[in-house]
Image (cartoon, rainbow over all chains, first blue to last red):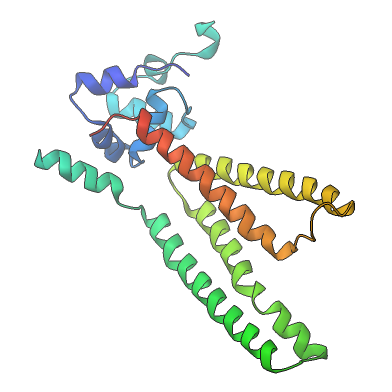
Length: 67
Length: 148
């Protein structure tokens, strides 16, 4: 699933490790989500959205809209 | 520079579930080596029969059953969903390798092309494949990841 996580993180000057600690996950998790190799669960997607103060759809692009 | 080093240190630290897994897994392997050595030494000097033979034969398998339980516990306790996902993929891959090798081997064995495959080697074979797949995925994640 395409997402804006890398851009949002970069805009705040955060490293992957810093974001991972905020989300209580591993850096590999953040990297896999950013590169689209792993789609987070709904609870983790909500956690990410809440951390950035955005709605889930502002971060993750719906696969149906992507087509 | 110091902050980068601290971040790298924090990244390399194992999470609580992984620490518990290692704390549980190592004793099972230690018990396996000790029990297997003791049983092998006993069989060298004695010729047990009946219930004792059954008991001594099954004894080395018990720590391995414990190891299977430890892997299962870790799977249940790992809170990082991506790590758990990767672990499940590696387990499926390990099971696939085990099934593929034993299936092909079985047919070859049926026609006396290869010697008998001792089934107690199935678990180490699974562990080897499981470990290699996990390593490959770990390397892939490190190579595609941004360094702190």
